[in-house]
Length: 246
Image (cartoon, rainbow, N blue to C red):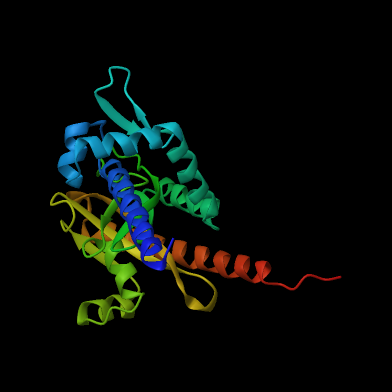
């Protein structure tokens, strides 16, 4: 087989992989089972192509078909893969404990966000004790260009606008109705060794509960949480980089 044939084969394989990933991305944004028609509409792929690729996903447990055969959901392999990603996050338990501590002190729902390409992802979430909540959940991909956590992630990864400079100077971001018109949020950064950004802690909830007094109170609690987690992150990184002794 000549080099031209190899190149054509490689291009075909890449195209197939991109189609398969496009199918998976449909489930990433859907909260309910999806039909073949919905997948086709979202991806622009022919149904015959989708069925062929889904068959491989089903064989490996990434996608599963409903008992009536009409809809599809993510399968157990996708869940295990997600849990592997979660376990790879070094401060997982410390962050969860910190979020629980914030909520126990009366804050709104607390969450932790990281950059996910051109979005941000909520990787951990602890609901507040209030009867009404916002609609953020662990695993949600949210806009990077809106919301308090988005501002923190952009500001501390180098975006140079007057607004982002103000966020860096203050070390905190507040948003009102940017992602959901009825909700507000406050967010602060968490840093690791060499002062690199690890993620953003955020508290969010219905806008009417974000009074001047509550914002000031929650901001102080967030600053404390940020300092605590940043110290833990630095300590853990230092331990992990210590040379082994013979």
